[in-house]
Length: 280
Image (cartoon, rainbow, N blue to C red; front, side, top):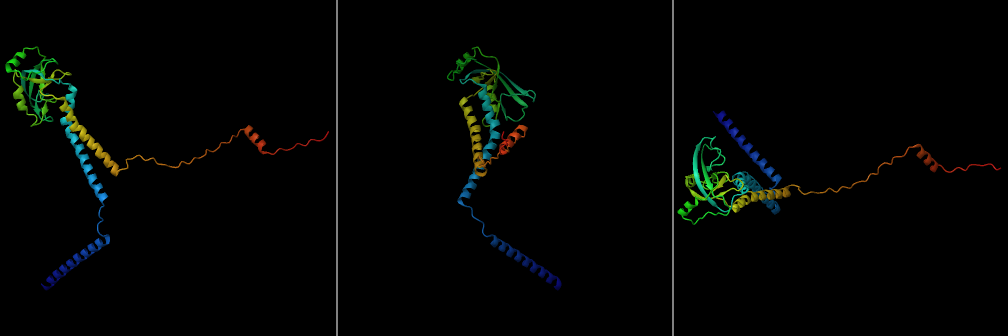
């Protein structure tokens, strides 16, 4: 028993001695390396500026991935459709409630633009195809009913927007179908001058332009500007012309080794020899 307790005591003492040596080594190493150098004001400013620019660049670039398909693409398609700016009068002619993926290639209103549609509603309308006509908002129901006798266009499809889809709470398809989905409903609408088979219940050109500016132009500019500043701060993006001394090497002169040139050169280099002529 005494031998076992003595061995345990020796092990505890050895463990304490080992810890003490480790602490001494760590303290000596820390004293040798010295205190951590403090960053200067310029280094702190560069660090925080870099962090802010990187955050802006990543955030704005990532937002483009979501904003372009959800807002920018429909806005561009709406502007390309060239809808009339003044509302005309539409009358609902019929409504179809369809079921099945094959029958639901389009819908007057559906919630969720990326999901497959198995139930859809097709609303068909006719409208007064006259650019000079404007929907009389102050007219009474009887006056609107009398306007339905005016010659109207061929049947067209009614969409809540150019894509026929949206997300709550901006787009609520139940309210849309209840308001426009019964036969004989009279309401203001906007038709496309490029494709008169497409009609929307709301259109504002300035609003579509503002959507493109806010959801595409501004994030794109932020991404580009922040990326350029990061490049200038941490990369050598400037074009530097290396000035090197160009040594002009004389081309070796190629001697003309023709027979005539050799003879001419020999005559020029050889001193003139006087020819002795005997006296007569």
